[in-house]
Image 1 (spheres, rainbow, N blue to C red):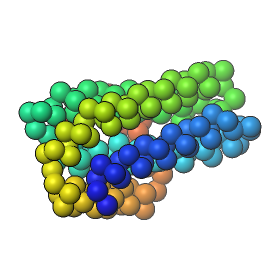
Image 2 (cartoon, rainbow, N blue to C red; image 1 turned 120 degrees about the horizontal axis):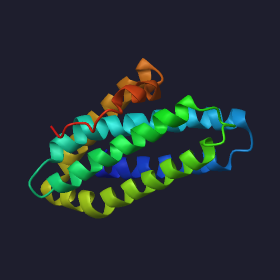
Image 3 (cartoon, rainbow, N blue to C red; image 1 turned 135 degrees about the vertical axis):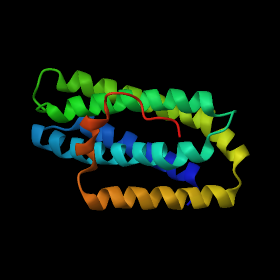
Image 4 (cartoon, rainbow, N blue to C red; image 1 turned 180 degrees about the horizontal axis):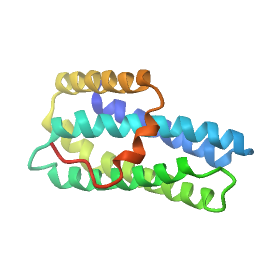
Length: 162
């Protein structure tokens, strides 16, 4: 699958999952959905940082990539905070809303500024190979179990641009 199409598809899936979490009626449902959203967000970010961003790094994308890495750091910090909170905690809902808003902003930035540049830099075959590599990494992270649990260890600084 084309890497850009894969990422856009995952953006929509994350946004839908976050909306379900926001609409959840019970603390048990919130906990379950946070775990799912946390895993999806974690493997999505990991595949961007470890595969996609290094592959599309070029003079015309570096500024967007550096900003994206800082946004990832913010998302990881918010997710780590949320995972440590009980769903009935007073700060759970406001913190989740900030995570949701920042995630949507990050998706918009990538889709408007980064992805058009990537489509000019890489042909369809290269994007498809990149998409396969990203899916392989995401599958590996899911098989290892509960990818969200590694997020707390990734909140000191933004991932390096390789």
